[in-house]
View 1 (cartoon, rainbow, N blue to C red):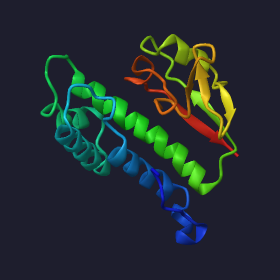
View 2: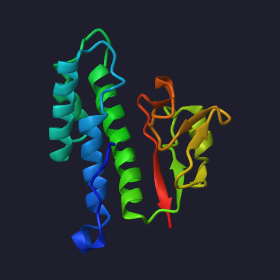
View 3: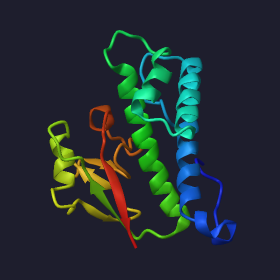
View 4: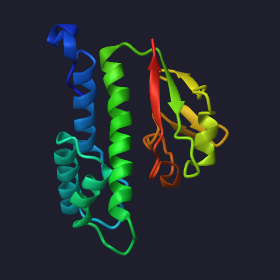
Length: 178
């Protein structure tokens, strides 16, 4: 199981929501991040995870994180380190938010929120039309894109079979309702 830690309000009133989110994000980076990177061995995967953990713990952004992982990647593909850093950290952030909300038990619904610019995939824009009226689901139900063919528990998720072309460089996020 990805998460075995349970949190209760007694742990720390001020951090009841924040701790599960941060810890879930850290666990996701440690255990899941990098699995979609092709052409690397397990040693390289662990080094990349270590760099992503250290960088996110230090509060670093995508540019600094890409510099951390760049030395471990084949330079055949331009901007590969930036793609890896953005994909893994945004996914870990969305996974951490999802798992943190689940642990805290506060979310009843979730809504897909896309970045509305020329770089956003059409299917992701359809999941979140302008005006924050994005695709709303019960918390435990997956989002769907491509007319319901592709399911994701959070933006960037591939655990339900979403293909790489729908999650790599995804900048979408979600917000929760009570």
